[in-house]
Image (cartoon, rainbow, N blue to C red; front, side):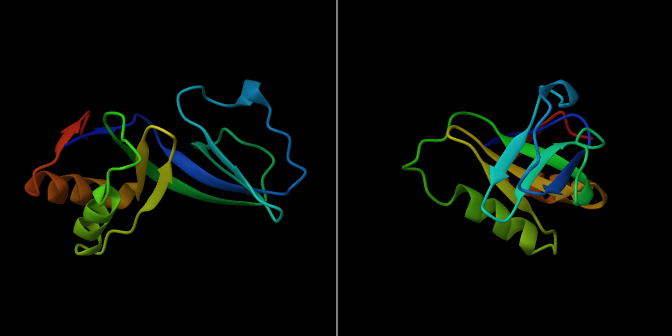
Length: 126
């Protein structure tokens, strides 16, 4: 399976429920927004979202290449287990077609190494 390391560094932002997304401030390559009754969470490039309540900075993103059908099972579980066995935590984002695995930048090299040892190919590796 092919994974692509997205360029740049990302952050997870927590915003209040009144936050209005300014599309001019957001990098167009990657943005994930989740809204609940309690908060708005945004994953975007580091230093691209303001104002925010909290931030967890310093993430890299691995994109699972190809369109993933809803009937496929175990892809995220397998990758997560491989990384968990190396004490590497993940934050997963799924879209209609694709899954993204976020890994802290200080663990990304180890994550790439262990994934390659387990048969994954990494495009744009560090």
